[in-house]
Amino acid sequence: MGTEKITPDSWYTEICREGGSALSLQIRSKIHDEQTPYQHLEIYETEKYGRLMTLDGLVMLTGRDNFIYHEMLVHPALFTHPAPKKVLIIGGGDCGCLLETLKHPGVERAELVELDEQVTRAAEKYFPELCASNNDPRASLNFVDGIKWIAEAGAGSYDVILIDSTDPVGPATGLFTESFYRNCLQALGPDGVLAAQSESPLFHRDIIKDMRSAMDAAGFPHLATLHFPQSTYPSGWWTVTLASKSVNPTDFRRTQTQDSGVQTQYYSSALHQGAMALPPFLRKHLGLP
Image (tube, rainbow, N blue to C red; front, side, top):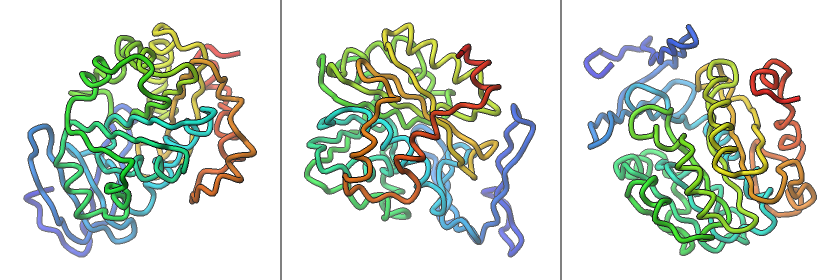
């Protein structure tokens, strides 16, 4: 696409070979093109979806629908923990998860650990609405390897860990392993909750199954996979998987989700509850009753 002339009828297309499908967004112009030390970063202006960020040719977010993903990765986890104060975000360089996390007044510290600083710098320039809380005194931005960070974290350092990763290829592969989840378990306090993006329930059932198996093997006693629409990701359907040390995710703070004052566009207590109801084909594949 970088050498292709952009005309009034140009489209950005991401092919999902494992799903036998493709997604196309009509674009106006390419406004950023950069080879970072880790990946190829591009940003486009689209006709209907606002700005589009891609990494190595894959859609990361658009201005139109990113709030669904960010809210569903953050709020179910924070409302499952009884009183989250210390939050770690691994990945999430666009800062959308940091923004949602800091909507919770009880959070005292939110540490973002992102390998590729250039993703954050591009987000600050082209998606400033997602970076509105970057200068919050409770926030810290750290551009280092998240796998190494969590391996060196002290026991009980965090209440919630959010894994906002790319697909399980390349540097992100290590964020889907039993050893990584075991390090997360150690870094979480007694009521700790982990949430990780877990791909499409239609195209990537084996990834979800393997993630849950790795979380279980790492020692997490409670698991829950939540599903939601995401129109610009493969299949238009996505998941987040929660793993917790003590609180069963089905026992999230329903009343407080309504009275917290946290402003959302998609997430709600009712949607949280409904998102945990998995369709029979997925329950069967995951070996759930």
